[in-house]
Length: 155
Image 1 (cartoon, one colour):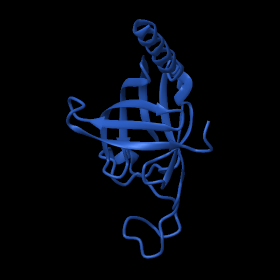
Image 2 (cartoon, one colour):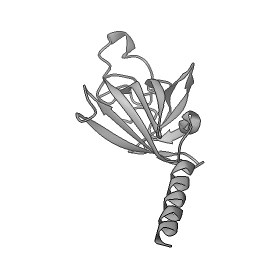
Image 3 (cartoon, rainbow, N blue to C red):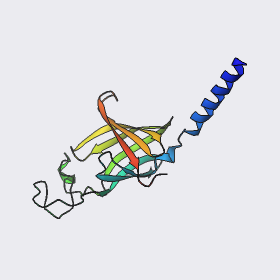
Image 4 (cartoon, helix red, strand yellow):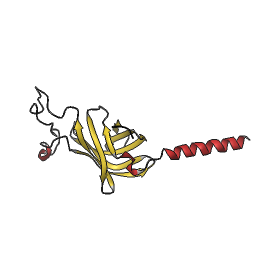
């Protein structure tokens, strides 16, 4: 009797785990960043996954700004490439070349942080259909920072 109960518990747990398994396209859509001051659209770019900023809470520089001209769109001022400093943040590609690795993980891509003007290696984990953990790192994932994004309008 105990064996049957144990087997039943294992079967139920395994089927529950399978139901949470993501497909590669499960991250497609619009996400709020952790600070909720930007919305990022994740989309397919050929066989990989990419993301771009589609809106900002404050899309223009505020009055008295020292970073840019008040009332004008925010620019990628911190980009180390001087030819890109005049690019608007809205429309900026910040995620490139992620590959679905299975087990709710996408890796092999890069993440650009316009707030500091740096590009990091990246890894994404879909915790639930509406929660995505994005980790940017230098070298190995141990040396990095994670941010939790939430899906806009749930799925």
